[in-house]
Image 1 (tube, rainbow, N blue to C red):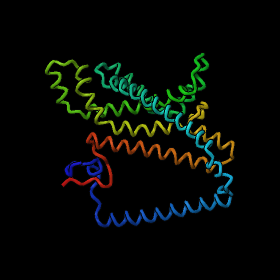
Image 2 (tube, one colour):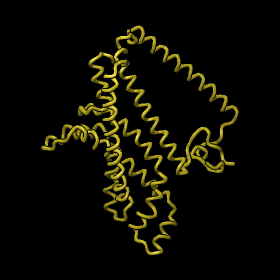
Image 3 (cartoon, rainbow, N blue to C red):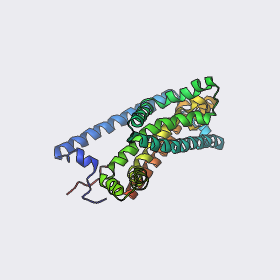
Image 4 (tube, rainbow, N blue to C red):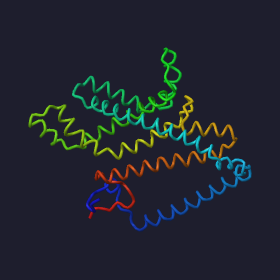
Length: 281
């Protein structure tokens, strides 16, 4: 990244002075000490209540445990990938409706976007699980978790796409129209490719939300990572150890997605907000 590129952090905040940096270091140190003390107390409580006994951890040495978790992991990836693909398509369609010159279409699309952005994905899952079957529509558990997650994400992605379209200089649209391109061709060939390039890092980051939304798949009994972890908890009576391992797996998944987002941002030249971003000279 060029040293003259201005990050969002630089635009919103002034560079901290010596006193502010000292206070930040002191505050960070105190916070880390408090967190360390809190973690030590939690571990001590686990020890006192016997949660660190070998019987709660020994089953992780068995291949059958990891094979079962791996099946759940694959199930999570399948739901996340399908939900992401559906939400990308719906997001683009909703964005096109939102910026349409047809006022009625724009208003209706905006209502749909606000609805999907405002309604929790869990509520949508219950709708597909409890309401739709009453009308004779029977969906597999895969779709009862995938569709609600995709719909919830599509509302967010529609706004992400719209931000990308608005970031494309208006002069390019005017130039395309002036040489005879129709508004549809201008959007498809000029504006949309650039908008997608701008928002790729944000799209990948949205995958983190999609993955986290899949953790409620137990509602529809879909065998994802969390559901399989719950089964192992029932079999081995190991709440703390199993949830801890599941949490670590989810953290690693989301960390990998975040790193992919950073990589794509660097490839596309999109500014990355970070502590090491250089201030403009």
